[in-house]
Image (cartoon, rainbow, N blue to C red; front, top):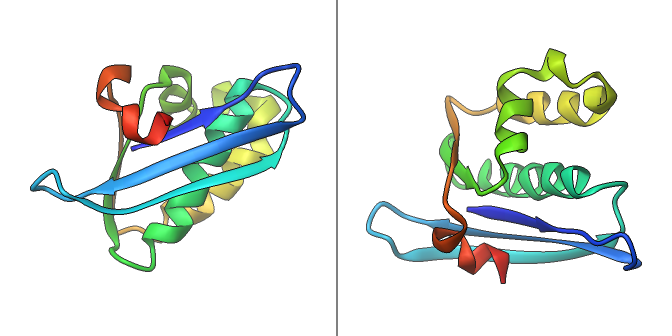
Length: 116
């Protein structure tokens, strides 16, 4: 599970993620404070890229969950998002390192740990 945080008036953006195993046990989690991204969607892209890099150290098969539907659309149809080409190329570079990769929508109420 992952989530990005962004507001136009803040100097920083934030990212949070949590790795939950099949038994619903928390294995790892992280938070990251970075210079404010251009938009909320940019923050969500960073919130995906960071745990992708971290999870490659633990398992080549991962399913990522986000409550941000536009992020899922970007990953599934990158050609529809030309203004994010650079960011999506970085995601694709990580994506091909996974033997199995899935990104799904998770209702916000189920994504509270990474949201906090």
